[in-house]
Amino acid sequence: MKTQVCIIGGGPSGLLLSQLLHLKGIDTVLLERQSREYVLSRIRAGVLEHGFAELMREAQCGERMDREGEIHEGVFIAHERGMDRIDLHKHTGGSSVIVYGQTELTRDLYDARAKMKGNVIHNVEDVKLCDLTAASPYVTYRDGDKVIRVDCDYIVGADGFHGVSRKAIPKDILREYERLYPFGWLGVLSQTRPVSPELIYAKHERGFALCSLRSQVLSRYYIQVPLTDTVEDWSDDAFWTELKKRLPADVAARLVTGLSIEKSIAPLRSFVAEPMSYGRLYLAGDAAHIVPPTGARGLNSAASDIYYLYHAMLDHYQKGDDGGLKGYSQKALARVWKAQRFSCWMTTMLHRFPANIPYDDKLQDTELQYLLSSQVAQQSMAENYVGLPF
Ligand code: APR
Ligand code: PHB
Image 1: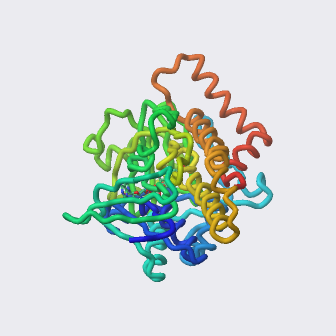
Image 2 (image 1 turned 90 degrees about the vertical axis):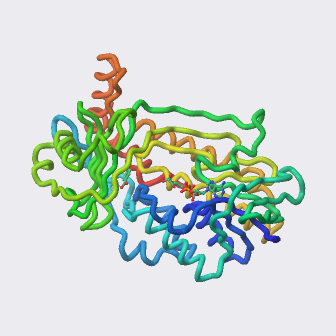
Image 3 (image 1 turned 60 degrees about the vertical axis):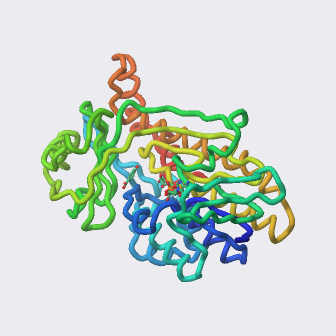
């Protein structure tokens, strides 16, 4: 098989890039390890920044997002003294975010790829990246007993944190930066009316909590839990009881509880791999960086990679200009690190850190009090939450 760009990974990053390139007449083959059903059964976050939404529209995949997604112009921060609202709209001169589940967004991208007859190959096994520094690299994968070879100009590694692409960069070139947090998030999806029209991030001495939503009949809630906890430790009742304890009394009183339709625990991690390119391989999205979910930056951080890579590929194929490809890693990393800074800051400000000394707790409280008392600090938070420019 021969193509111009071989994309590894059929998550939002890989799908969006393949759709954008296809619309400009650039041929791609996308290799995904799982079935489409499996990819679409994963529940992920659901806050899209303006720049990501624009890319979805450019990819002709924004119709349902614009119809069913909710525009949010603010978020709440709850704490022991009550609840404050950060006005995203006011502080950013009119920006907002769209609340639209990542699962639905991925479904829209798959539907668009199918409609355009994009070459998306599922259930590939044993993907190997070869000759990355040669003029014509190639990828091989196994389909049953057959080994298939895909010759291409470029390889894009969009295969998430556990993928193979990053590992194809030699160890003496790749540098990894990582911070693990001593807790995870227990998330519950329930067919109940959301407790608040806007998201509530709650800091509490028992631990962090988040009230989010997918629609007016589908809620998503999270609580901070120790890494040693398992889903089996948490019945629905125990979850709702604990969540209520971490919310202001009036919010807890109006919380509608119900059967959980999904329940999972995710550890929190900050991670960046540098460089994001090697020879003719370019990494994008979770393959190169991970953020803790607190600032809702995960998908949005992937969006800027796709934006830079898409434009770099257009420059190459349409103008013969390789400047964008050469500068990709540096440009992408500059924005990636800003998203890292923001999510680490929000995570550190709002969670309970079991090993903190009393001095740390005092500083943490002061950080939040400063934010809530300073218009300048709120403007900075809002600017980052709606997404820095690409
Ligand atoms: N070969 C082929 N596909 C692979 C391989 C492999 N060896 N390893 C992993 N994959 C696939 C996974 O099955 C997954 O579908 O790559 C895809 C990667 O998708 P994501 O993990 O969703 O990563 P990405 O597309 O970069 O999405 C960005 O933003 O909110 C965050 O973590 C969240 O998924 C989200 C991400
Ligand atoms: C979610 O709805 O799943 C969600 C929203 C905001 C976050 C993280 C997760 O910061």
